[in-house]
Image (cartoon, rainbow, N blue to C red):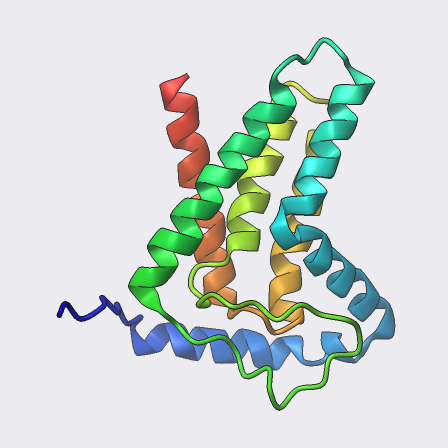
Length: 179
């Protein structure tokens, strides 16, 4: 029987993550930031925020035929690539959430930690939604908020978020090169 692949990250990545997590701890003591980051993390679940923004964009401009379906399909493909592909190669454990209390409702992820699917889908969706839009800075700000929320709620290590963002960027570049 074949052993599953499990690629390990270098120890320097753990050192980086520990430094970010330690520095981030002060931010976790702010109730206002907790509300913002937990809401952003929840909005990123299943790409809900991206589907909602895409639908709002379509309603606001009915001539964008096919755009709702296009982004939905791209997010589905990205999710499949990240959750059923890359995460299975790394099988990295998530930050220790068991010993931490969460001040707000939180869905605990079932997949491995590396890379962050929230960050990957955020970069992809913000890139697609931003094309030709005057709201591009807002989409990118929401993407940054959703991605960093995963560090705040301890669902991901900082390196998971950076890697997820890189995957989203690569996926975006690949799509642009095909079009």
